[in-house]
View (cartoon, rainbow, N blue to C red):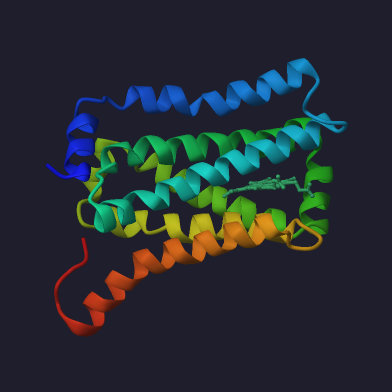
Length: 208
Ligand code: HEM
């Protein structure tokens, strides 16, 4: 039995709820930082930035799942919905932090901020796309949408890309870490798009 098969056998016994539970650990960490005073000199910014970064981890983590199965045979597809919903959860907390703590629910101030920092709009469009994905991630929607469900869920690629552009743009100068995130996104998009392009160009076979 190969390593991938052994891993898959063990994974089959693991339900999805521990993934949701483990996904709350980063939130507990942020709460701990706030309570212990370790969040930094500007706590709101500290919370905002950490939640944005955690969201990015889950978003790119979700994109790793399909190539992982194709390239090394480890099948985490069962956990993809949980990872996606956790990403949406953190993006929502990130947005709520901005709206409630940063903008203090002052709508005029919020609109001015969007005008001043256009990269926030990229984040908002990314959030709206993720909202569509979250709302259609249940079994009823999968059944109702049929073949169109896959098409709708391709929105994950523009959603993650907008999140990464939003992240890079908010930096004054793109840091080394920023380039690493951008590179990871390009590789993951390439891994997903290449089989699709190949199947379009060279055969009628549909990619998995
Ligand atoms: C796909 C959705 C989104 C992702 C993945 C995302 C991710 C991020 C990341 C990674 C950062 C920088 C964190 C760091 O430097 O450590 C950030 C900053 C920020 N994001 Fe988002 N974000 C998203 C959507 C939004 C939305 C909807 C809003 C609200 C309008 C928003 C508001 C902000 C703000 C205010 C900052 C801080 C910018 C600054 O300090 O100048 N983001 N975001």
